[in-house]
Amino acid sequence: MRIRGFFAKTIALVLVMLSISPLIIARADVLIEPNNDFYERNRDKMEYMGRNFYANGESGYIMLVIEPDSAREVISFKNGVIIYILFTIDMSGEVWGVADLNIQNEQVSGWIPMNQMYIVYDSDSFADENAANIKEQVFDLSTLDYDGDMIMWTWPGSGIIGGIWEVQGLESDTNMNEGHTIYTDEEGREWGYLSYFYGYRNFWVCLDDPSNPSIPEFHPAPEPNLFPAVDPPDADATASGSASNTSGTNQSDSAAESPGANQTGESGGSRAPSRFTSPMFIITLVSLVAMLSLVLINLLWVRKKRDKKDDSDGQI
Image (cartoon, rainbow, N blue to C red; front, side, top):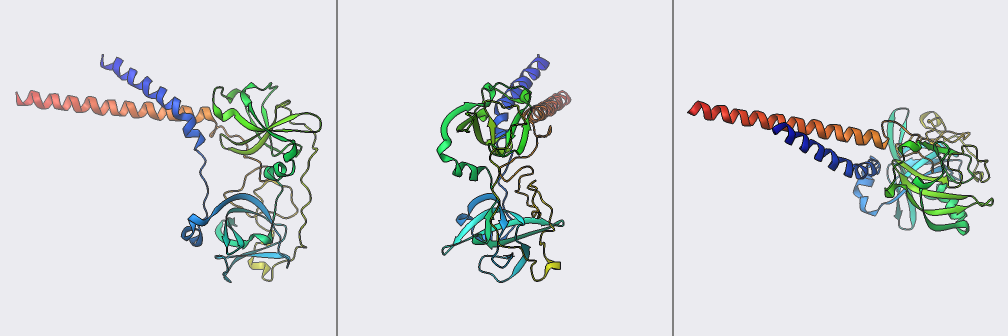
């Protein structure tokens, strides 16, 4: 009877963990915050940005400082380098952005006026530019007609694949599959947008041809209109185009490595799938931990009960 009760408890706990696992997965990604004193002191005044920008100073380079309106330099970049801006703050009408960067394995954080930055074309840029052809309408990824894996595009017509999802791992009856934004291109194809999907952010799926990785490019990113690049005065001590590019774009200058930057495509792209972050892997891991925990609790309970029995026998 004790063994039967133990397995009943185990099955019940596993079922509970499976029911809440989508909630655990949906919250697996956390909002990255910069390691910056000014940010910590003014956290309640910050606006989340989370987008890539080109350095675009009128003098040909930009300089990150320790905090807004400070003259204390942290690092400089020549124009064209891509920098991921995490948050912004309005300082008496002038907007400043903060970047948290990894430069040659050294973590640095600094602020830059946003009028010295130029947005990298991304999914949000596409949506703003094509608002007339975008409608609010519900779609469900699990109901599409697949002929292979699901192809995730940085935006319709970009020609850039931001991720690939194995359809076998696509669960039904979950709101994670639902989107509410549809774009119709000039050929009549519909594209669905999702802001979040199991770790992927800001991507589009061609609803009429979801498994085709060869849809021709028809809406490439426009060329950025930047001031001519100039090496900063102290080029040897700065990262003027020498930092590694983590945005995945094929730019002539590289991007500063940021923990918030996406790993493929433009800033609207998403990271490639990993078996260690797939839903089934996480569900299996959570269930295994639950079972092992219950086994340990049961063993401790049995041992405690046996010790009490031994103590009572000894008193007799």
